[in-house]
Length: 244
Ligand code: OAD
Image (cartoon, rainbow, N blue to C red):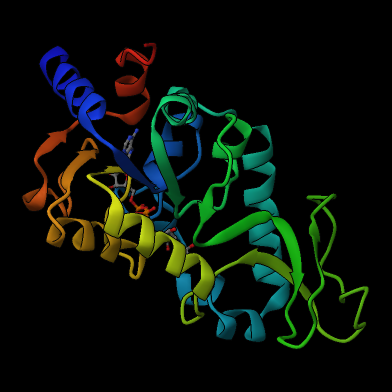
């Protein structure tokens, strides 16, 4: 482990521009469930087509709402871990773009700024109507499903991207630009299975960037990385020298 940490420190110190892409694994040590790496993961226990798709919401909005309210309650009491804090600290001395697939907001709570949240923010409500722009921080994580207070027509839903929905085009463009310019792409705690997010590491690889992965398990990306640190992200960042 020490040798891997030293190698990571050297790569970081030599890098002009860094993109950090995080996934559910970065929040695992904060007690937030991942989606697909073991039998307690969310998609092992729940059906994403029922709980994370427009069709699922249309079929049973109360069930979907209740599931997201349950997740919000867990996230509200979770705390950022050394990986979230370490990434925020790294940005103080590097030109770093932080991109996350997570909707839990823990990067912001750890002090990161300008986080590109590709899949949205679970702690916000938005109107399910495409022609209504209502979006507000959710206040009551026990409240039942309600209609949008602005248009009074459609239901409110969490402000996250569901399967079959498009990601924000401006955000994708910014991430693409940062990825094309980076010399180091650091993938932390993602299975690299969900696109378009997973495509950014591939783009960085094609452009000749160094790819480093922090993940206790091998992923589809592992064969392309220069350095694979197969340890939990919180442990890695806790050992990293982030001063100087
Ligand atoms: P996954 O659940 O697919 O993958 C989590 C990854 O984290 C796995 O590769 C684990 O090995 C790794 N991991 C587990 N514990 C870790 C730790 N302590 N430190 C580092 N890595 C650890 O989650 P994502 O790749 O984020 O989309 O999934 C991508 C998207 O799929 C999510 O954003 C979500 C889901 O459907 C939406 O909700 C739109």
